[in-house]
Every structure is written in structure tokens, then in C-alpha cells.
Length: 336
Ligand code: NAD
Ligand code: DAU
Image (cartoon, rainbow, N blue to C red; front, side):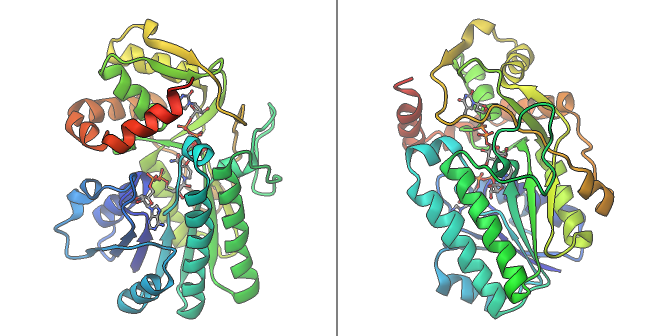
């Protein structure tokens, strides 16, 4: 099985590559990644010496690059992670979000139409459903009500991908996962940002009242779900992948402070994110029924593992907190 993994140098993509090569002897992987601020070859160091792995630096929006990779690697399946993935950045600067998430996905779908693959796994998000009133949970037929430029671009790319199945028979499967956490996550997202700031005795900026609810999924559980869907998922279908662990943000932040031995006085409530979705909640019965997958890592274990990783990789954190990061941090948090 030859897997073309786009965005494989990012957080989830690199976890997927490490897991696929670590557990599937018959797998070969080609990563196609532009190495934006979020892409980091250090994330792939554990597999760098594996003869079944190769890396191509390139932009998924560049049709010639994508065509060449398809021709040279001849993938059996595409696992499409590459995206601008951060909601706050999408609010500050929507342009690259629509370019990569829509044009990039379109470019890959066109390549898969020209040179057929066995499966096109389009990795998407629960954010496409928008905020969900309790006690409802979104199943795969739930209406799409994206709130941010990021989630609107993902909803658009989901529909684009499904249209290529309906119209051209490209064997697309769309996955919609909840909030991932774990090692190697760029410290702009809630959990790694709060861990990094706590370890540095910096303020922990909680948006609004902190009662927004997210469903936390350990990254390896997400990747196991994707491997299961590559084997047993159906073309033309959408699968929700939830962590079955709903928590308000403030509770997550308190647990991080308790685990790192830092005081709650570090918490700083700041101006809310515009268009901030109050609650995400997924019904994941379908993937359980079709593949038998379920999350294996509970939040307590996953969070402890994640905090340990950041404590042991302070050098990794320091290296990704570049001038670009400090500039972003100032733009996003400076006026709050
Ligand atoms: P990430 O930001 O950590 O990584 C994105 C990767 O894509 C980076 O390696 C980056 O260099 C690459 N990339 C960006 N633009 C590119 C382009 N034009 N061409 C080639 N490569 C490009 O993202 P992540 O958190 O690992 O998310 C991966 C995917 O999973 C995204 O599609 C995201 O929408 C989806 N998702 C994320 C979560 C989450 O909680 N992080 C949850 C559900 C779904
Ligand atoms: O739900 C899946 C989505 O989860 C993915 O599709 C996205 O790629 C991923 O970024 C994530 O989006 P969120 O917006 O939910 O994640 P984020 O980590 O940015 O924020 C989680 C919650 O924490 C959200 O309610 C906003 C809040 N938050 C976030 C940051 C960065 C804060 O209160 N303070 C912060 O500084």
C-alpha cells in the first residue's frame, strides 16, 4: 500500500506517518508538504531513516508539483491532511486558508481524477457543523453551519471532495474529527499553548468565560481511526471521529495547571474569539459500526503523556517559537 500523505510534517499528519510506518509493514509513505510555519521536519525524524519513507517539499496548490508526485510515486491512496488549520489565524488572515484548503484540495482531486487511486481520505473537522445546542450531537447528516473562515473553507472542501466522488467516481471518504491533542502539536492551539505558557510561568489566555466545550481526541486515536477507514471505510461516505470526552476549556486549563504544579493565578480571561462556537459534540456511532474503532486513550492518560512530552522537549518548543510565532502571538493576543 503506497500512501501519499499531504501535510505529513504537521501535527496529525506526522503522527499518522509515524504510526503507519511503525505498525504496518506493507506500507510505503510519500509526504508532500510545503513546510509552512506549522510544518516541521523534526516531527518526522523518527522515520527519517526508514527506506519506506520519502519526503517531497511542495505546495498542494501547484498542479505541476502534484502531477509529478502522482506520476513518480503512483500512490494507492491519498491521505489529505495539508491545510491551514488554526481558527485564530484564519480570522486574522483568511487568504492562505482559502487558497490551501480549497484550491489545494481541488488540485489534489484533479490529480486523483487524472491518475486514479484506490482511496482519497479527506481529513476534515467537526467544526463544519458549527456550534451545537445541548443535548444534541451531530451525526454525519447534521446541517453544515461553519462559523469561521477556517471551518467554512473545510466545509467547502468537504463538499468539493464529495462532488468528485459523485461526478467522477473518485473514491473519496470524508472524515470529521473533534479536537486533537498530543505530542508535537504547534503551541498555538489550546492544550500545547497552555502547557508551554504554564511551563514558562507566562499568563494562560482563556477566551471569554472559558465555558466553551470541546470534545478531546488523542492524536493516535484519530490516526488509528484513519487507518481503520483506509481498510474498511466506504467511498462516498462521511465518518465522524469523536473523542467521547467533552470538557469546558477552563476545566482543561485547570487540569494543566494542576499537573504542572502551577498556580491558577496564571489564568487570564481575555476578550473572546469573534464567532466563537460554544459547543462541539459528535455522534460517532457510524465509524464504530463500520470499523469497530473506538478511542483507546482516556483524557487523563493522554494529557499526562502530552505534558510529559512538552516537559522533555522544551528545545522543540523553543525552536518553533520563532520570530514569526512571536509576531503572531502579539497580533492575536496583544490587543486582548
Ligand atoms: P497543522 O497545522 O499542524 O499541519 C498542517 C500541515 O500542512 C503542515 O505540515 C503544513 O506545512 C502543511 N501545509 C499547509 N499548507 C500547505 C500547502 N499549501 N501545501 C502543502 N502542505 C501544506 O495541522 P493539523 O492540526 O495536523 O491538522 C491536519 C488536518 O486535520 C487539517 O486538515 C485539519 O483541518 C484537520 N483536523 C485537525 C484537527 C485538530 O484538532 N488539529 C481536528 C480535526 C481535523
Ligand atoms: O474541532 C476540531 C478543530 O479543533 C480543528 O478542526 C482545528 O484544526 C483545531 O485548531 C481545533 O479548533 P479549535 O478552535 O477548537 O481549537 P483551539 O485549540 O484553537 O481552541 C480550543 C478552544 O480553546 C476554543 O474554544 C478556543 C479556546 N482557546 C484557544 C486558544 C488558542 C482559548 O480560550 N485561548 C486560546 O489562547
